[in-house]
Amino acid sequence: MDQFTTPLITALIAAVVSLVVSLLTHYSNRRKLHSEERRHTIEQRRQLTEKLMDLRLRTYPEAFAITDDLTSTYTTKNHDMSPEHVEAVKMEMIKWNKEKGAFLLTKASIRAYRSLIDSLSVMPQKNGKYSDKQRDQMWRCKNRFRGTLKSDLKLFYNRYAIYHLFQNLPEKLRSLL
Image (cartoon, rainbow, N blue to C red; front, side, top):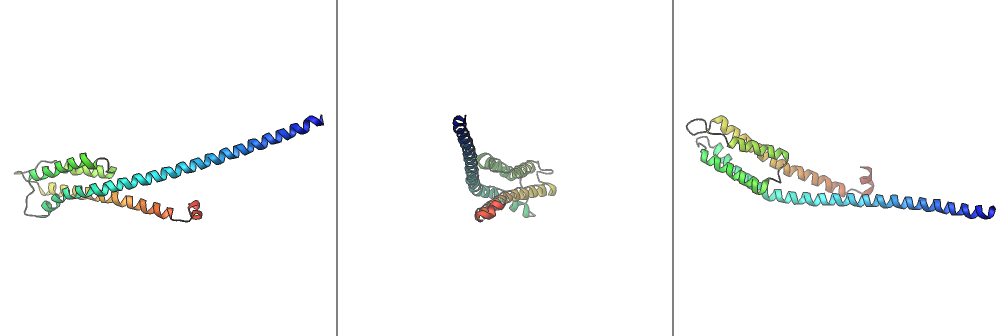
C-alpha cells in the first residue's frame, strides 16, 4: 500500500500547489487588468475634459460678446432698449446655443440660459418701451447666465488642478488617499 500512497500523496500535493498557484495568478492578473482599466478610464476622462475645456474657451466668449449688447443698453439710463434690439440679441443667443453652446452648457448654465431667453421674450409694457422691472430682469438674467459660464470654467480649473496635484504626489501618499 505504501507504494501507491506516497505517489498519490505527492500527486495530490502537486495538484493543490498547482491549483493555489493558478488561483493566485488569476487573482493577480485580474487585479492588474482592473488597475489598467481604471488608469485608462482616468486618462480618457482627462483627455475628454481637456477637449471640453478647449471648446468652452473658444465658445463662451461669443456668448459674452452677444450679451455685451444688453450691458451697454441697460446701463445708459436715457437710452430706451428697442424691442427690435432685444429680439436681435435673443435670436443671436438662440443661434449661438443651437450651433455651439448646446452640448457645452452645464445644467446650471442651461437653466440660466433659459431664464435669459425668457426675460428677452417678454413684450414691452407701455408705448413699445420696457419697464424698469423688465429691464432689471433682463440685466439680472444676463448676469446670472454669464456667472454660470464663468463657474463652468472655474469648476473645470479646480478639478484639473486637483487632478494634477494628486498625480504629482509620491506613490506612498497616493495609496493612503
